[in-house]
Length: 225
Image 1: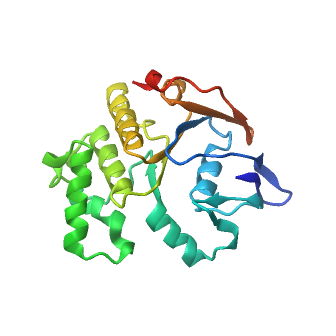
Image 2 (image 1 turned 45 degrees about the horizontal axis):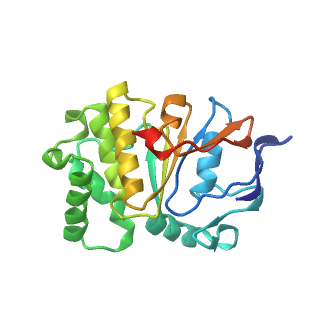
């Protein structure tokens, strides 16, 4: 990101101001700040769910400002995975098929989508719960299903927005451990959080307040375990 600014309304309200940020392939970092600090705006811009008012965003070498909506959709489908606080799982649909929806726009046959979904559920320790519906799962299990859906297409970049915010401490620790394991496997992981304990488990931290980024000091990778 180079001098990225996002404003809303008239007169304009500045949600993100002149943000410069580099995330290297294979990194794991936290962007940490209080409610209303601009975290969600930043994530939406990083994930191409929104466009900046000014500035440049490049993802995997692609200048997103030069891409149309269809091209951005393709970039998200093949390069970016999303995990949200509220899970966004389809009620009444088994975990396996919820995860398979992460491949819906790839053109992959249904049988292959479901086979890959089974592998993704195994990665997050939920192979035995594949046939269970969301209302039959705990909050931590539902978040693990959401993570499996986000990574079923093996995206290079995983963006997690408050992934532990609705969970108890133990379930939250499990989710952070799964994200760390995915990172160890080569996935670039960016966690948006207000929880300092979660942030302290990340090798790198970036602060945000009132739409302004501030780089935190790196901490040893072992501190997250």
